[in-house]
Length: 141
Image (cartoon, rainbow, N blue to C red; front, side, top):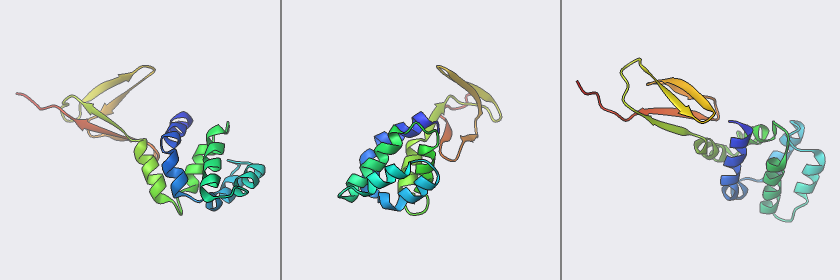
């Protein structure tokens, strides 16, 4: 996912994330990967409650100008918070419903600023973003 898309997904799932994680489990990895600074870590762990720590951590990630902050935050969820990561990945899924295609044919999908060709049976994307193509039409002979 792009950093802007990742940040948007974090914002839309803010309450869920901050209620499901424990920032203390994540800050060590995030400092090591330079997604947050050591002073960020110190500030976060001084909070009174787990939810306050979690909110400060997510806020720090969202404010970060680092290209890798969100990437490493998502990676930090893999071990102990897979259910959170799964929900965030589902939030990034795009589903396109295309007109009927003959087997092996192509269609051109255009959105302002982007375009691409997709095979009817293709599932394309990266680990964090999936594109599912559904054939909504019927063949008429």
